[in-house]
Amino acid sequence: MDTFRKLIYDHYHTHGRCLPWRQTADAYSIFVSEIMLQQTPVERVLGKYEGFIRAFPDFPSLAAASLDRVLREWQGLGYNRRALALTKAAELISGEFGGRLPPSVDLLAKLPGIGRTTASAVAAFAFGIPVVFIETNIRTVFIHFFFPERERVSDRQIMPLLESALDRTDPRTWYHALMDYGAMLKRTGERAHRKSTGYHRQSPFPGSDRRVRGAILRILLERKGLSEAALVRALGEPEERVRRILADLEKEGFLRVSGGALAITR
Image (tube, rainbow, N blue to C red):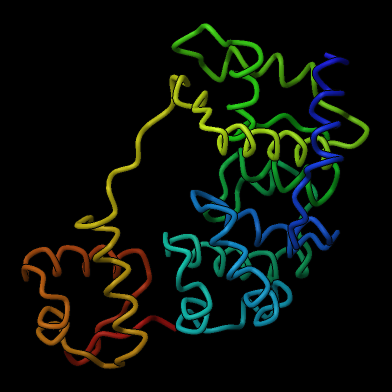
């Protein structure tokens, strides 16, 4: 493990990425970056992160913002459920924790849109808590080094190695180094993460409900008070499909219908 750790750190000290959320100790900024990075490449997040932080510099300002405004700042990142969950988390943190992120994995994991993995990542990066967690780049590194001949590798097999390798004195830097090594492997064509038993290829975006959901929100941000019939015409999608997706968006808290007109909530 000492040899492995040295190899990872040597690469990081020479080739580590300089990312804006790594240049701060502010727990809010780190929290926002982790939500943005869920299922989204670093390059896309780089284009939105700093603008979002300028618009909403802390939990109280985000909690007070309209969903309409938050979604405008979020446009381009996709998976708009994360933006909605982020505003709900900001409201809860402002109301129950005085606008300060709780330094507890258990409490973080209870926030809207935050699973155990994201909670652990936030705990490590924002508070230096030596907690074990795994994500795609980390998974790539461990399969590459420790399971090169295996075709099916479970996270349960990787976790003891992660536990043993963890730099408990500086988990923040250690995880940055692991992720950067994994990103480097992927750039060289390494696809070790596909050997994971939990790997699932994402469905194509064109033609998907995700694309239509995003298009609906974009249109309603630009054209307030649109009727359902006008929205169907603007989308060029079957009426049944649009109605089904609208029902989902309303149920999730994105939309409200008033007098036959559609609008973003709040």
